[in-house]
Length: 437
Image: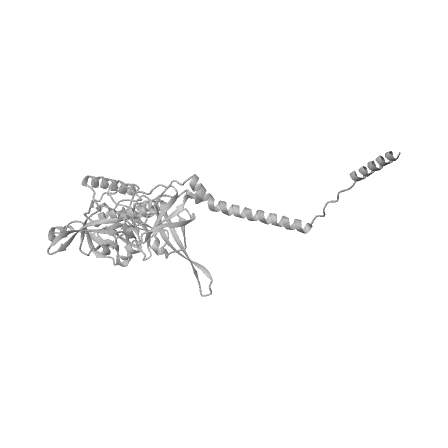
């Protein structure tokens, strides 16, 4: 009996144990709130870091996986002289161009031109200039400054630019960069009204011209409509003398202005360090702030209007640097390559100097820049450079071509003839080129 009671007591205890309720630990609400806040804050910080990392590294990773295919800019090589047969061909082309301008004129049997015919000629010229505006731009330099109240404000300065090429990734615009006063940022307004940020790829400190790049990636297909790339003509012959030209851009200092005229002279030059540039003078009036280009009746660019070129003539007569003289410089700037600097001013040896004074043909040195590589190498005024490296020179343009093929830091061996004791003696010098100043 006692054993049975003991078993019942044990069963009762077991049942009581099973029925016991386990109390949960009370929740610390303050601690839970703190953990929630920390978790949310960590998630936000992580997201921000992830976004920043993506924005910074995504272009780098994309360029590694899908590199942009940049095409090197190269302009066709031009011949210095034009053969008589080729000249006849050029004359035939010019006659055809002029005929296209005059085709709207209705000539009577008496060969008299009416006022209407005269107007048709100008209408055709205007249509050509309007079409050519597709490759013209306005380059604006924005400079930040502070006034006496320490308030920040922006100054803007604008000039005309011309789209000279593209490298498969960006439009390349040539403009007189030194007129933009070392701007903090650049904007380019295309003729169709589209405005984009631009980067200055390089500047020729002698001519003041620079090339600006505008990425394709920032354009929609609609924004690209109406944008064209200029065709660069040739000025390495006398074919352009006396021919009609149109000045577009800002020839009278206002955007969209234009002038009609002709090339009156190609004999003047602009002498700069390491460069001798042919100047195209015209019979057109311009502003002292003129900028833009000269085009022929085919719409090809023949010259770049700069302050230096216009200042050569009194009375604000429009003049431009011949495009053939600039193509090598524009190529290097467009490809982001630095220009080599030697420090030589010069000119061509004339036939009279050759025949009357026995001066050899080559690049005649008129002056050597102070503290330049040329001065350090011992080159003097009145020296005649007859060979550069393996290339024989007959003109200063030949010397310029060789220099454009070099990079800063490279050496260039020059063979010169120096007048001494009544005769020209042979000398060799070696120049270590630096970057253009």
